[in-house]
Image (cartoon, rainbow, N blue to C red; front, side, top):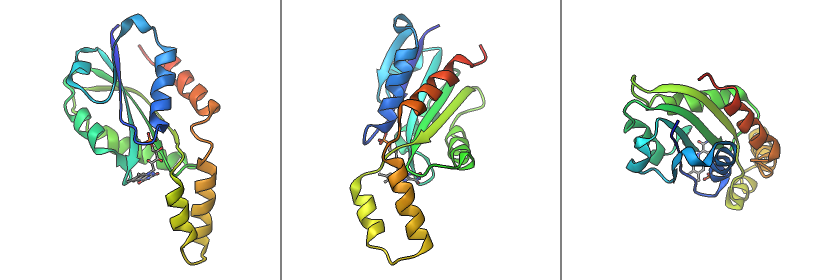
Length: 163
Ligand SMILES: Cc1cc2nc3c(=O)[nH]c(=O)nc-3n(C[C@H](O)[C@H](O)[C@H](O)COP(=O)(O)O)c2cc1C
């Protein structure tokens, strides 16, 4: 079955997930790999990856998801804040809301992704508070993600998909 891997990634985290999916699937069935592009729409299955912007998928991916016609979709993404699966679920729900009723969502996966140092500098400059401490801890926790375990979990979630 033909598939395409379409993703948006500003700092490389989501690109790591896209690459892991590419490694896990048969290369001969891949018709497109890269940034959102109408060429990808010819595939029967689309693996669509986003980075989290203001609690949802980034705008490029939102527009791409809205352009789908009848493909089946696997959604994946990365977010700076981790630690709570309910948070990831909320983001994935918001991203999935960009899909029309004719598109079947066959699976989804999210993990944490590191953020640029300027973000830590901004937290550091804030007045001492429990919120600041939590944000600094989250930033430091994000630094190692996506890690090997995240990528292995993503690959495992592909093998358990309903056909
Ligand atoms: C402008 C901007 C907005 C962001 N908004 C969020 C957000 O609302 N929630 C979150 O968890 N992470 C947020 N992040 C963090 C990124 O989603 C996260 O670092 C992601 O892994 C980046 O993926 P990329 O390396 O593929 O670009 C934001 C990052 C930027 C640059």
